[in-house]
Length: 397
Image (cartoon, rainbow, N blue to C red; front, side, top):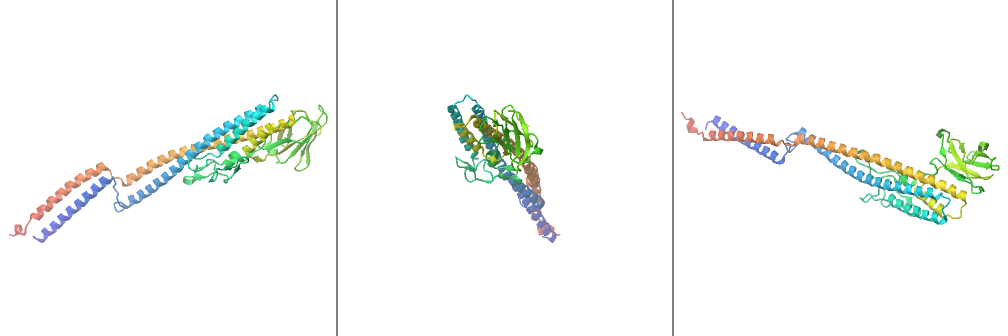
């Protein structure tokens, strides 16, 4: 065999080997569905596909957080809805308790009803999230967040736990703000009557008429004179200074003191005094306990009872407002979770498509390439076979 013929034989053999390797690679790609099976196939596409897979893993993890938050918030919304119903029932009971025709037995029955509502509300406050945690667990609770029955105390740190990418989803609701930190009275100040009063007057919960005039001070209003010719003196007891002196007093008429408006109803006696003080915070359970104690107390005078009833009704109103507000906040977070789920779905679809475009095999195109490769391989084999049959003697002249 001449040297050129030997070179042709080797070249033809290499062509066959190359065609066979190409065909094997195509068959492997079609079988796996992957165009890029190793970084060497397409380094740039392989690197970008790896980034896409990493992003998909993050989306999956964020989706789990989204689903957990959705479950917790749905449970919280249901619990708060029940809580609102309970507090509305409590308020209706207290409105009924103002009926002068009610006997001590009637009031005791109302107290029993409130006691049952209180126990149910405590169970709601300790609602499980179904995954070993607590819906109102604040920043984390290994056990029921409200410990104790007689005087429940909130064990976790106030606030809520956040999960998901950037901490955008709530894993708990702040039970401290929902159940434990409720302003007394009308939410700004609380009213009361002096224990030494001898008349039948009582002071209402009052309202703020001018926030800009509020001082945060405590006040007293003293009544002087005989009925029909009474006056009042309002004193800032924090500073010890008079705000109003000898002002005409009419039962049921509005009295305004530094942006705070109140009414004193009934027939106060000369020397009777009433108070205004900045609202402190207490739990809804304490407010219900106060109401229960009031209803079961058979020794109170009518003015004292009416005064107490005014206070607990105002407290229940604040608790009800707070729970409605909490439910609204939970609803807003549920909407955020829904939007997050939609965004995750869109991101997953686009990222999956991106990864597929980078490394997946177009099977139809791959089969076409394989068929072309088979034709090329057949031609290479025929060429090699033809050269291999050539002998040295065929070229002797």
